[in-house]
Amino acid sequence: MRALLGLSLMLLPAVAVAQGVPLDFLGGDWALLDTGGKAVGKSHIEVQLPGAMIYERRTDEAGELPVWFFNSERARGWVQLFPGPAGSLREFVPQSRPGEWPLVLGSDVTLRDGRKAKFRLTLSHASDDESHRLLEMSVDAGKSWSPVFDYKYVRAAKP
Image (cartoon, rainbow, N blue to C red; front, side):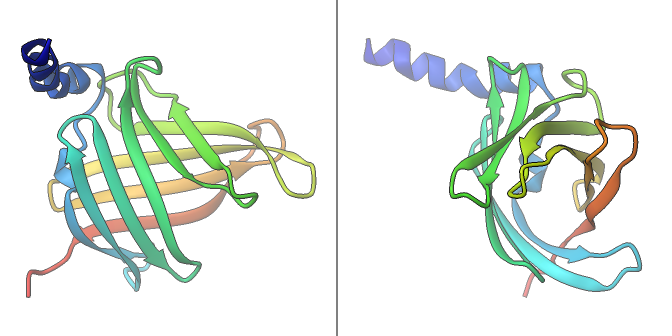
């Protein structure tokens, strides 16, 4: 039984990467830049299980936010989890095809004021030292989108 578990854990990263785009390049420290190139925050990302689980601590003008990415067999790709305003976890599920860049995740949510909204997160991979994240929101069922944030992630220089 123990050998079978060990074998399944060894195969997990290969299976997980086959289901979606590889995100392990995100591991490390990042500077967050706005669309004008101004520094607006930082991020520390840990690859907790290669090809399967990533933890991010992002700090920007809104404060610190913990974010998790996990490669879900059920969802057939990466899913993002983060704390919602009511204390529960929000889940963004894949909207792009498995293995396709950019990685697009999203969710339909109810806002605190009761309105329905759609969120769409687009993650692009320029290189192992640069990526882009655009979070957009729609309150008209996806007819129009407004940016929530638009960050370029640039690998932080090593001290």
